[in-house]
Length: 195
Image (cartoon, helix red, strand yellow):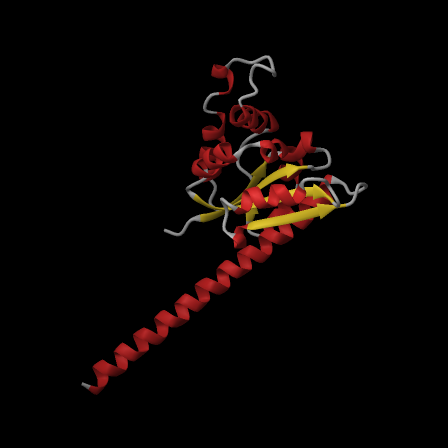
């Protein structure tokens, strides 16, 4: 069975990031246009997954036990969805190469697309793109930039457009494979008929 797409919003910037999951959940009509859904999680679940990855539980006044397994729970809930999923946390931009590997390994059941969201002209954006490019295929790395006054809904609309384009490309690829298979089967049928 083919893997589903997962679109991972990693920041570093996102307007009103503290209500990202709430906004995604409320934007089902928009998400449906790109064949997307959200996992059954809340913002606190995603916050704990970021704390677990960054290992900042002490700074947050938590114990390791409080956050252990948070990412795995988020991923399991995403895997239960029948459609492609979109999720993320702006703190994921601050993870190092080892932590990126852990995150991508956790998401190994998906074709993971990384969506970097940043304010136009944000310092360090090229370095962030380069860091993710070492671990994600170029066709699965997307950058969505926005202006200082843009709201979360506008940024998400751009990210969903990226997801829609990726979904269309996947469908075109599948159509190409099916056409090739059909041509092969027709050729085999002709060979049988002429024998």
